Length: 296
Image 1 (cartoon, one colour):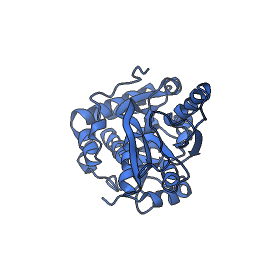
Image 2 (tube, rainbow, N blue to C red):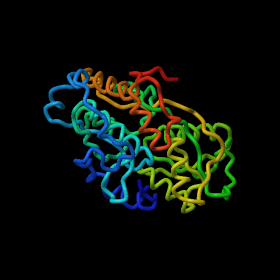
Image 3 (cartoon, rainbow, N blue to C red):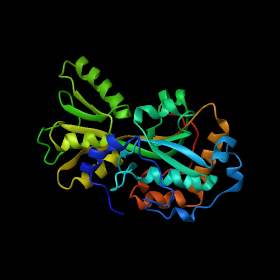
Image 4 (cartoon, one colour):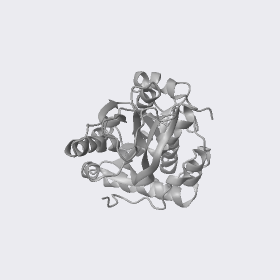
């Protein structure tokens, strides 16, 4: 599968974010042959009639977060391991996964109204668990990236005073806010946040020298480095490993159960592992689709 250059993602993600949706071909853009995933009648029977009758599961997803979820070279087709997992869940449930591009910060508030579920590398934390049910399906750490050679001389142990690129609404964005207070309290220069709604724009800002470093989930950092050739490098080690979850409304226990059981089936029959292998992210695999796991 051809991988989308990040420069193209940066140019198209915002303009096309509201227009993009899934193709009628369940395998469009997939790295794993999703036609091999079969419906499980018992699990499908758990679906609320509204979704079963419509024949589709509407999935809110921020398609600027490669390689988890992003737009293919055609500028309209969502691809990534989140997309393949969403489509595999749909196949188990006997419905189409209708992946709709969305602004990251707007997905959770629209769960249960505009979107049936949210699948977009959402780190599971206490705040999000208060807003919605979350089914663990992946685990990722965080890391930093800098321009090749680290021209801004960033110390990964001390980012005070540096210009830090982050995607709005992410856990890294929240942690950067806390880091600003920490630096200020220590009498050091505060980090200067450079926030963008699309992760691809954060990467572009770092490549262009607007940011001293970029802070994101480790799979996203690794992919950005790969896609930009020799322009970026990881700074320091991966840190703060945390579970990520599929978001479902707390008011919809039937759909929550259906999604949880569908994910567990995909884990148990090996489909889930094959999808992550195809995208080079097997290290993030989990063994159990835990509902609302305890987090620190």
